[in-house]
Length: 385
Image (cartoon, rainbow, N blue to C red; front, side, top):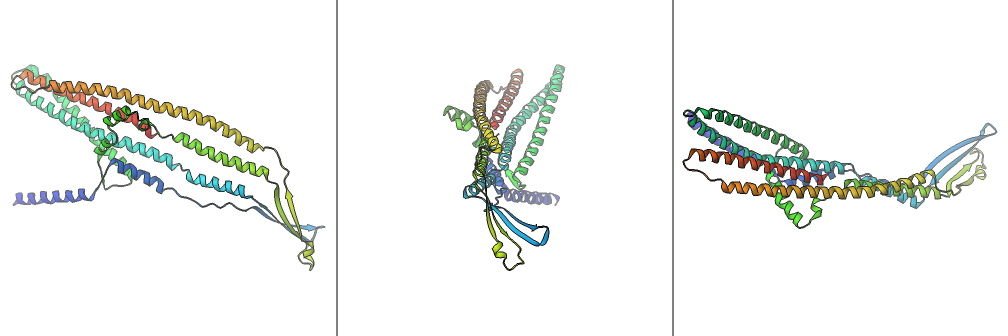
């Protein structure tokens, strides 16, 4: 009866776990990045700005001969011309388009790439650690059986135990790091009920893909987004508009219009109404205009420097990956040779120990190859900066 209950409970638990898994959405790397980009644009807000035709309106009153009864009033207003209003509108429109969230988005995408890549490598590492544990377990059984007749093997047995504990610790650290990575990805995505398909990373960023792009001389694949130059171009446009606005102010001829009226209490106050106009004397370049012109020149020099720096960074990333890929090819050849020379012995104990050692050596070489793959992928993360 107890066995039947346990069996039913197992079936129920299995069905429940399947229903939970089916309810969770599986996210690929491509979908993950697309979701991050959507979130960035959804935070942006735009405001409508309409330049004022009247830039200043003032109402004034004054007395004549210090008599309150003799009061006069005036309204003075200044206007802006169409060019000035157009520049102001363009300036505000440009401010709305630029958003620091774009820079934060790049940082989020780079963090997403590094976190996802790390989990992808850790999953591959776990497979190798499991294989190493299997080999050390086989070695342990063999040493245990032989140590009863050969006391010299006790040291090997102790060494085997130390190696096993070391591998188990690495496995625990691997699991802990993957859990932390998963929490980071959930936080970036702002979703909890999703499962990440870490293997989908291979479809976009694989060693084979890097080699193919290098052979095709596809430099764009190794070109980082030049966010610094984009920011400088944005600042340059703002400076241009500020400069144009300042020039328009200096070209302004009509300063203000004025309507003035005498004592409103008298029946003949209309005769005291007068119209006035204020004119500005054209002047040479103002201090503000000169300052903006210097800033534009400095910005132009900074752009040249940034473009050169960007090209050097792209070249460095490409060269680093090229050198690491050459190293990767050599490592792979070495592993291939080791695999071809590793054969399973039948009865000879010495051959069996030699086989175990060669298997351990092979798996350690594969771990080194995996570290190299991670290094290549970390170098490539510079493209997202």
